Length: 246
Image (cartoon, rainbow, N blue to C red; front, side, top):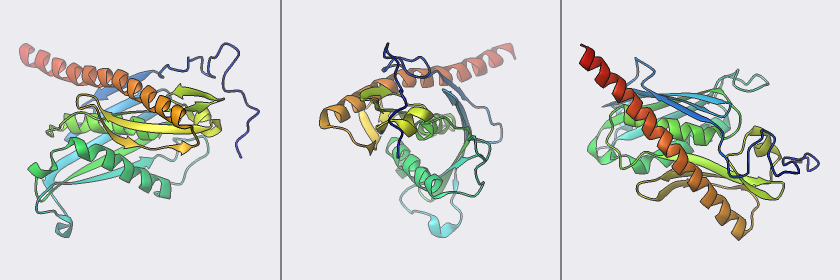
């Protein structure tokens, strides 16, 4: 049972961390941070810290998993034992297996999988520190890592959530709001195509509240998308500068 006595909004309408209802947590993105991976990205979204590595496209093993007409995307989402206050078992949990599938399915519409038959791409997501909204932060970083790996993409996927706290629709719920709030609506979005690739809801919302939450989450996605672009541009500006110096 959720404790309804805890106030998630103060008298001024501000949240526990001082944010307004429509305000994102701070977002920091970097790409190309793992030299041994074909593509990589790191995200700090609020107190979340997540690192992603991409390997491929390469020949699919074991071969019986190959698809003659397309590439196979394999995704592993994992939370480090030290990522939460109470030590987590390092063994994959049911929730981690579920989120691995959810993240993979949200990224697939952006990829030209038909261009790489009989190959596989492995996507590894490691949550180093968790504070609510890890699936959205993981999708944002994973899509950036796929772009860093040089995979042709229809668009870069970005994700953000909105939810309901103390009867109000709020953007980008942190862990306490996620646990004690009334609802959570994660959305993954391709800004250039104006297409949603993931839409889930946990909790209860009226039709009007649901529409407001989705609209707010999409606006959050658009803001984070600009940070994604800046992260990619920063990497290639550095590469260009190094080439000039040589």
